[in-house]
Image: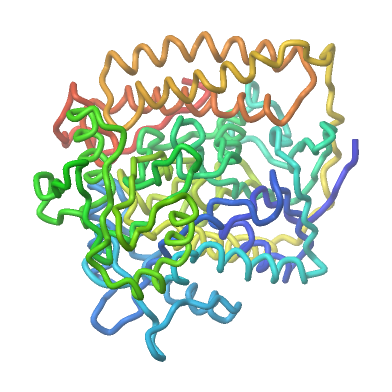
Length: 531
């Protein structure tokens, strides 16, 4: 077992983790651990863009209003106001970093997406996240104060005392244990640890996210005793490419923003039945509309039609989508795109304050892994990359201020990882079987439309599965697959628990037993290991 020391440990390599690493490197040493290669992240897959008020015809008040409306009464108004007003400065930082946002002439080419009242989405054609990720990687890789450890999956946080005997407010984080590709455990010690590990959409059978998005940071925080907030609000992106040979390819919100029309197999445009905003309604409305139409018709997908747009415009605005579809036999210039909803983003996450601090001393959480209060019951399109950049900066300012008052201390002594009586596994089929069962169960029972009976069934089955996984975890040596299975099981249970607590339909949480919004539930739901 190796021991790695740094002033700061960052777990994750998306926009939140890398932008924070670049800033923290100015005041200390930084270790970044990431599950795959450094470029593998949800940020890298983000197509649409990043929302910010950058045009005179727009205003902070309008962006705030759109965000609060989409959040269905659960967004924190002060957090929303602060984030939106600081957005232009974060955009300026990205431009200074070399991010090449698309332009019309000398002006930024601002797009519009569902829920927005103005064009305010900055994009780099249809691969915005890839462009941002590339520039952040270049910045971090060139900094001598930053060390990057690829193919390391975090196991658990290194704490002063075990969560079973010490509440979060009395506890302290000193880093994390991580497993490398050779299944060796290493200790990463740090004065400040930052979870930036993204969401948990791989809990579901169909997702727009990569295979690595298994809720690791959320699960580690839960095991450490921290609260998870609003885990029932899972955003299903309405339009993921439906094709037998393609997995997890998103068809950007911007396609609808530029005039794309959703149609049934017979060509009927159906969104007018569900919202006066039609295709530009918020994601929860569009996803439920598609889900309802598929259940009524028995068809496997609906179609997103942009054949009425000019071919040159489509090729220039959506080169990645055009190329990907064409590669698989779909010419979007002449035929509609088959699409289905897919799990995309978690509006809930680890409880943090306005500076991304958790209740555990020296532990922060930034980006999708955290619950900041920005999104409420539903996220406004393209506010996710914004959240990552804004709250990474707020965490940096908080850490820097803390260091002025109290210089960095020496690293805590490390506890040696103890494998106990664990042995090599002789029944890995348990992992693959339970992995598939959890994701299918969550899709069918805890998906876009829920009910009390479905949640009860899910809860009952997850209890059995989780007990099996726990026993397996203690009996056999660790592997990446086992750790990811352990984490999706943990998060699946917390989504179910949170959904059972909300006896209403609001935003992304829709239940046929309580189809209306209730003022009694105009509040956050929280779950922790002590309940």
